[in-house]
Length: 279
Image (cartoon, rainbow, N blue to C red; front, side, top):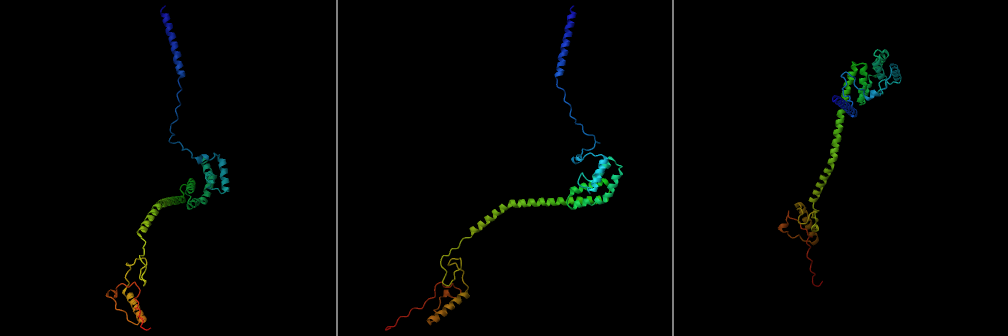
C-alpha cells in the first residue's frame, strides 16, 4: 500500500520536470546562422570588372549581328565595349570554332595595327594599352605588337619624367613666391641703412669771389686747385693792375707763391689820388 503512493509521486515529479525542461528549451533563442566565410577555390574564375559586367549577355547570333554592324560603321576597335573586335572575340569565347569571327579578325588586323601607335604619339597611353591588349587576343605572337609595347613603355617613362619636371618647377615657383617677401624686406632694410649713412652736406658760407668753392663742400675744406690754374689767375690779376693803374703789382708774400691757396677776396684796388691845391 505504501509503495503505490511513492510510485505516483515519482511519476508526477517526472511529468513536472519534463514540462519545465520543455518550456526552457522553447524560450531559448535560436542559434545565429554562420556567415559564409569560405574562400573561393583556387581554380574559380576572377570576378568581372564593372566594365565587363556592364556588357549585355548576348547570344552568338546577336554577337555576330552586332559585330557586322560595327564593321559597316567603321567601329573596329573603338569605342571601348562597342566595337567589332570585342564582339568577334566574345563570339569566339562562346563558339571557338566560329570561322566567320576568325576570318573577320584576320582580315581586319592589318588595318587596325596602326591605331595603337597613333594613340602613343598623341600621348593617350591608356587607350593605346587597351587596343594593344585587344589585338593581342587575336594574334598573341605578332611581332608588330612587341614593337608597339616597347614604344608604349618609352612613352610612359617620358610622361613620368615630364610630370616630375612639372612638379619640380611648380615646387620651385611656390618656394620663390614664398621667399619673395623676405627678399623684399631685406632689400628695404639695406636701402634704409644706406640712406641713414648718407648725411646731407650743408654749405657753411658763400663761395669765394673767384668761384673756387666746390659744390657740396664747406669752405675751408675745398680741394686745393692745381698750381697752373692759380698761376694763370694771378697773371690775369697782374695784367689788370698794369692796365688800370700803370704800375706793376706788389711783390707777393712767400705764402702766396705757386702752389699756395688762392685768395678768396677781391683784388686790391689802387689808392685814391689826393687833389692838388688850387684845383
